Length: 139
Image 1: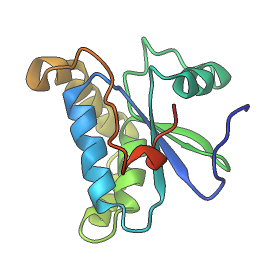
Image 2 (image 1 turned 135 degrees about the vertical axis):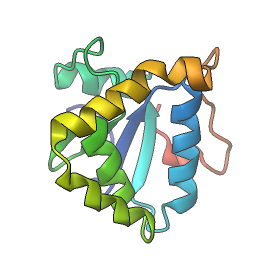
Image 3 (image 1 turned 45 degrees about the vertical axis):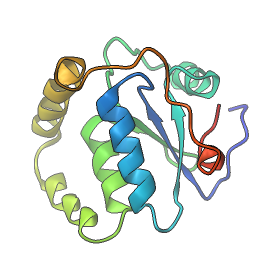
């Protein structure tokens, strides 16, 4: 794939106009003590490159995506749980939910994703990071 990205980092792709997604990104930033994650909106140029490269149908995958250079893409509940597992205690206890079958985890995830604009609202434009956080975001 053709974009600059440190091999030691993990990239979270999120819906840039979703208030729940933006709040979740802010939460990850506050709890990412090991500085593992970088971020980009699904609507960004980098987000579009990854979506095209992995042939992701965004009409079927209404989801947060987790990209790692070594492993590729994780999405939906698997991505959310893998992100939580990197945030230290107590967030890493979310790993326990991996024992729940994927179809059940993703059904819950899809239900929340389907209703996120209704419950949390949406923005007119993607979030613009502050100058202090700009290094954590790809455009």
